[in-house]
Image 1 (tube, chains in turn orange, yellow):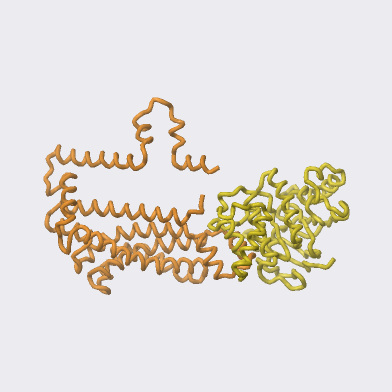
Image 2: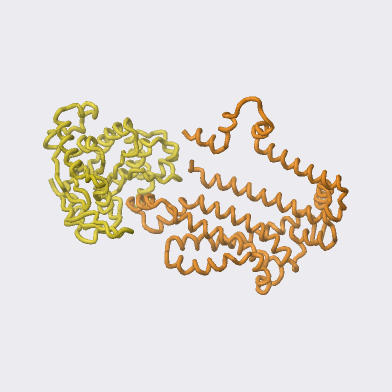
Length: 284
Length: 264
C-alpha cells in the first residue's frame, strides 16, 4: 500500500525507468547514500588539494586538506588555550545545550499557549515581528552588559536564535491540529486540559520536533559567532579556536576548527532527525 | 415507546464570508428510545449541523435539544459521534484509541481492560490491539471508531456518514456489521447518509430533510412497511431485490430529488 509512494519519495522510480547502458549519472545514483556522499566529499577535497598544489599557494594563505587534517589530529592532544580538541568541542556543546534548553523551556509552552489562547497571540505577535529582524549576533554586546563576557552571554545569544523557530513551529503545529480530532475527543468526554495534553500536543509533536531541529541548527551557527564576539572571557570553544588561528596567523587551525564545526553540526542534525523519526513512529 | 431525544424549534445560523447561512429552521422532531433513525437530504441541508448540535459541540441560538429530558449543553460520552473520516488518534494504538474515552471518564483499569476486550471481540479485530490506525484498512479503522464510541455505552450514538469513505464492498459489510453491533446494546442511533439504499436498509424511520434551511420534509416509517423483522435483519443483497424495498427506496429518492435544486 505505502510501498509505491515510499519508492517515489526516495526517487527510485527514475532508476527503474532509466534505459540500460548506464551513464555516469545512473552509476552514481545507484550508490548507497553514505557512499555517494563520501565519494563527493573526496572529490571536493581532491579539488582543494589540486588547486593548492598546482598554484603553489602559500600555507599561510590556504593550507591543503592534508595539512588541515594533520592539524586536527594534533589538536586531539596539543592544547590551544584552555585545552585540546575535546575541551573546546565540549565547551561549545555545553553552551549550545544551555541556550537550547532555555529556548525549549520558554518556546514550547509559549507556542502552545499562544495557539490556545488568542489574546496571548495578539499580545506577543507584534513584539515577535519586531525582534525577529534582530540577528542573534546583534544581541551579543547587549548580552555582555547583562552576563559579562563568557558562557552565559554566549548561551543567551544561542537562546535568541533557537527561540523563534521553536516557538513558531510549536504554534503552527497546534494551530494545524485537525479540528475533527478535537471534536472527537470532546464527544468522548475530554475537557480542555486533557485535549491540550492528549490531543493537541501529540498531534503537534512532529511540528515541535521540526522546530527543535531548526532551532538546534540555528543555535549552533549562532554559537560560533557568539564565541567569537562574546567569548573574550572564556578561553575555550570552537569559535575561540577559529579566533586563535586568525590571531596567531595559523590558517590551518582556523580552517580545521571550521571543518570541525561543520562535522559536529551535521552530526547533531543527524541525531535529532533520528530522534524525530522515533517521535513520529505513528505517521505514514 | 418513550421519547429519548427531542428537538424543539431548533434554528441554527452560521456567519459566513458571504453573509449569514441559515442551516436549520424550526426543526422539530421526537426520536424514540432505542430507535435507529436515518436522516437523508440534499447536500448542505443541515444534516451534519443537526448531528453536531446533538453532540453538544455547539449550542443552537434558538430552540432546545433534550436528551432524556435534560437539555444538551456540552459534549459528552452519552452522545458520542462516529465521523466519516474515522477521526482516530493516529499516535494511539487500536487498544489505546478505545481506552481513551474510558480512561478520561475515570473508569478503573481492570474494568477498562474487560470492556476493551469485549468491544474488540465485537468488532472482530482480535490480534490488532497494538496496531496503529495507518496500519489498518478503512473498514477496520471505522470498526475501531465505532468501538471507541460504543465502549462508552452511549445513550445515543451519532453517526455522520460513517461509511461514505469506504468502497462499495466494505460499505455493505459494515452496514451488516453495524446492525449486529448495534443489536448488542441498542442505543438510540442518529445516522446520516447520502445513500437512500443504506437508509432504507438500516432505519426504523427515515427523515427526509428539505434543502437549506433544513426542516423535516417527510418521515417514512420503515418499521411499519417492512414489518416486525425490519429489512436490516436479513442480508443486504437479498433485501434489495424485494419489491417493497425497491418501492420504498424509489419513493424516498423521489423526495430527496425534489429538494435538489437545479441551481445547486
